[in-house]
Image 1 (tube, rainbow, N blue to C red):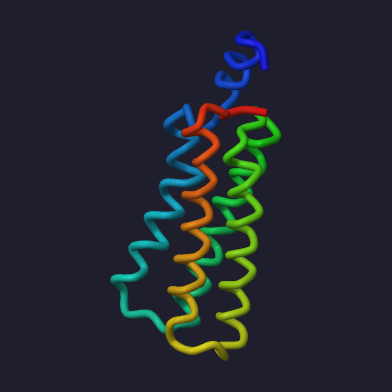
Image 2: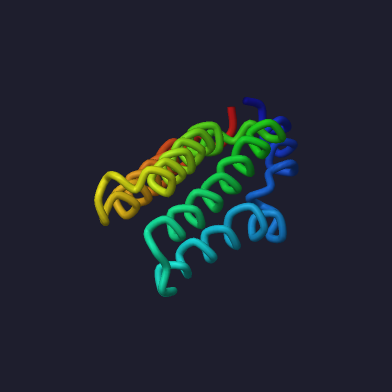
Length: 125
């Protein structure tokens, strides 16, 4: 990617714009994480985590469409899959009391791993 294209992509990147980053990723994560401290049933917590992951996943995919950020094309589908898994936990409630913790832990471990290409110098495609 040429230097000019990289600057153009960075200018369209919502991660670099604090209000967009807060709205698409910060606030949904804060609500979901905060729900761990409320007295909620597994189903209620799963719906909150699922909704939050869905918002974050959509934000990633929209950001990918805007600037082609490599992290977003990896983490968007991971977060959406996590949202589907959380919805399944909420609806079926069949995988035990720790299923939501395992699901969110795995999803966010993959999201964190999706930053590795950026750390190695490849931010945009």
